[in-house]
Length: 510
Image: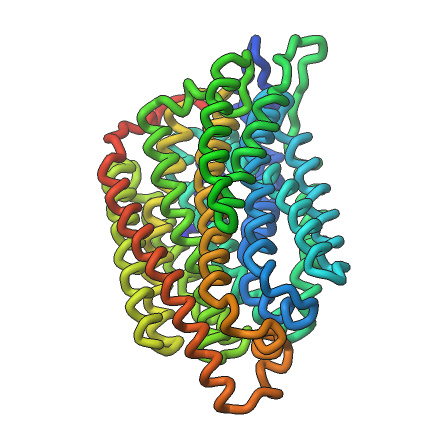
């Protein structure tokens, strides 16, 4: 992976000795001044810490959840612990993105970190599955203010030419964090307890906030007229996402969800400062990128959540073994992301997006075949490496293309909209697939038997014959899940064919 110091040093040589602080963008006069170079290392460190923490938390629960279920019970709520986090993140991402454009990046990100840490502490203290789900929702609300604003800050403090090189590294960190979650979750559960999966966020979050306060200087404009906040759009968007996600258990909610999506479009077209501008989404590049991101986000998140469950419930592996099954993505994603950042200026985004999505599709086909054949961990690891390569190639190119297509005053909401669709794809996939698996297991496996298998004892109280029968039953249910993941992977590759050619403005100013 390339060192960060090269882009930082290049910028330092080219920048004035004492550049002005970045000004909070407003509707009347968006600011475009760069961050002072002396403070940029602190900002970079703060962003890296915050991104790693929030992205990891989306998936760290994957390998910890079987143990959580064994401790707290409530297998029927298995999918919701992960889905509610991503749901809360999904709904709040565009809100924070818009607020960052209006009020400035720093205050919005600090609020996000504070809410995230409160949810982390609450999750660690939870003593029922219901209370854990509530605390995970609070965590997700905080994460919604961390992820898009952090990536927007990266876009602010680097020129487009620098961004093409450095975003590969930042994209790799996001991928590294998101994919390392299952591995770290398994290690933490094995060495300490599942509660430390949440407590460990506190020191990193506090350090990130401190570095951001020290390094990022923003000058707000007192008295500047600000547009009204789009509360109506926020409410309708929240209800729409809830209805779509709830359609996994109650099919009648699906048409309600689609109707609310139509109402959301109606509301946004008439608001002077919409939380998710329809005009922005109607641009071909952003529209196609949103669809691409939603599909591939669904494939990646589903694989990261359900491959560890397959290892534990079907192969009867430990949480650490479950985490190791997806660990090769930690290698494939950052390597491909850094490689993608260097090829971007030469080839443009489209070839990288298409090749990346094709890799994801092939990996989804392979993992479905391996699950059907009840293959071991080593074969899954090779497939997860291919998943990582595909996401690393496509994700960096897609994000830079979107950021490069808008100006400073739209960068926050454009970045947030891209992340919104990727996250909603993952949230809906995990929730729907969780409902599919629960339906397949309904009436076949007593909940207390599953709790024993997935809990801290890993089925030691069960007879070997019962263990084998249980694993076969769960395998049949999980086969349906991975068939859907295969279909989504192929659909993602097809959607990549529609990504338009893009000429990056590499020599433009910030």
